[in-house]
Each structure stands twice: as structure tokens, then as C-alpha cells.
Amino acid sequence: MMMAGNYETDSAATFMISVAAELAGMHAQTLRTYDRLGLVTPQRTSGGGRRYSSRDVELLREIQRLSQEEGVNLAGIKRIIDLSNQVDALQRRVRELQADLDNAGARRGGELVPVPRTSALVVWQPRRKRNAD
Image (cartoon, rainbow, N blue to C red; front, side):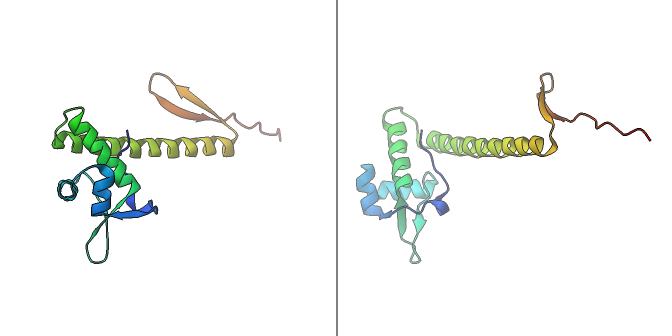
């Protein structure tokens, strides 16, 4: 399911509200309502006009599908979008932490050993032998 994303990094073409509404199969007033409710957050021009990205149009289509085909009300759709965004953020964070763990293990020459009971991850390094003096 396609949900809202990071709008600042979406550098693709943007559409005026009338074009976005036509692409999404909705009335422009519906897009304004969805913006007010926080279901979709289009970019703004310096004059305050809404500019919808391709990602926004996909999200609008998904909102329409959830509403019409699944019977989800707008409050439910907002919750679905919010939870999907949280899941995306958590998945990104897990990937970052996994990369950090992989790098830490490689730098130290140790092995990553999962500890089943605590669900913790321990970095183990063998002790270096000391020279006899």
C-alpha cells in the first residue's frame, strides 16, 4: 500500500489542484478537504497554491480505494496513513541500526551473537593473548 512520504525530497513534477483532482478521479474540493483533514499534504507555492506530486496523486487514489472499496471512513484512513508512515520510519531506523551493528562488528573483528532469551545482540571479541614478560 502506498502511503504518504517525505515531500521535501520528492523532486518529481508537481500538478495544480485541478490536474491532480482529474488524475485522482476526484473533485478539486475533495482534495482541499483532504488537505484540511491532513490526509494528504501537498507542497505550496509562494502564493499558497497547492502543488501535488505524483506520490500525492497515488495517495489520493489509495484514499479513494479505501473509502469506496473497503468502506473505511476518513478518520480510519487518516489512522491507516499515520500508522503506515510510522511503520516506514521504524523500518528505516531498523535498517540504520542493522548497518551500525554490521559496521561495529566488522571494525572490531568480533562476531555478532544473538542472545535468544533477551532478544539482545551482543558483540563478542576474543581476548588478545598477552606476551609473557
